Length: 310
Image (tube, rainbow, N blue to C red; front, top):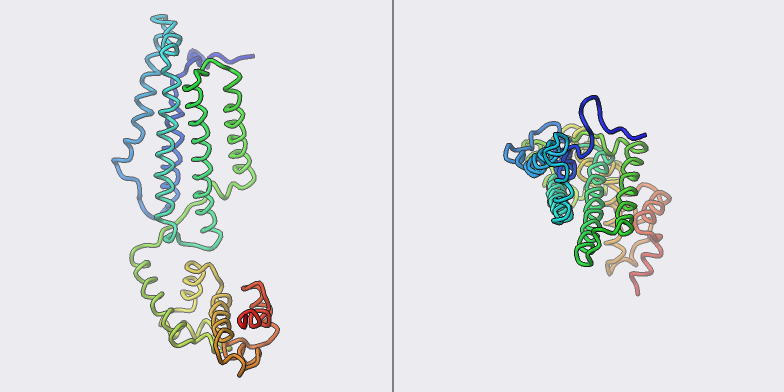
């Protein structure tokens, strides 16, 4: 049973310009996910103009058909090749919108505030955008082949793109139901004061880690680093988590491992045992040193030392 109308409103050829709303809708969706800053300018609402224009044209055709003014208008327009070239137009428009979206996602990637999970969600939107672009390019290729070989009247040829479109829609549906947190997640950008603070903090942290080498203190705690940086303990942990996507211990151990690698590559390495080198870098036990070094480099300290001699 086919539904041809809702009440007195006929559905045949209903003038809804959804094709021109897909890309711009996604672009506005991403910008609306930033909750603490208004990022949509008034001029960007002009991006809805293609949808309005096409919707107005479709409305004219819709009225012409259902009032009996011109019941064959769709057929005559189809014969001109309008719908084929319109498909190319909306695909190119959506391609541009997705490139705008990727530029926006790239620009604000470092400014997203939050945990590793939040950062991954932002990265997922970036990945999704590239998948969408690949999908658009496949559709464009399909349309260009149709134009080149005059296949626009071949129903069998269009089965291919219908299959691809269906798979893409089902994939989005699967993500929506199984991983809804990826699609429906709000984000917060660091404000300018915080960015300035983080820049200052980064310079201070680089100084105490590379110049003073405070990580060589095997008993170093968050509170010690907070005193050196003149900020609260919690702020140190949050900064390291958001900037380096590491816990405090992982961050400190990453510097210790770099120090060990430097010592193992030096010409005076034979003067020290591996345990002595580990202690010199700030590790408190041989077992944790071996485990952390192998996890970071993929080889044991002994294997790394042997490779440096070759």
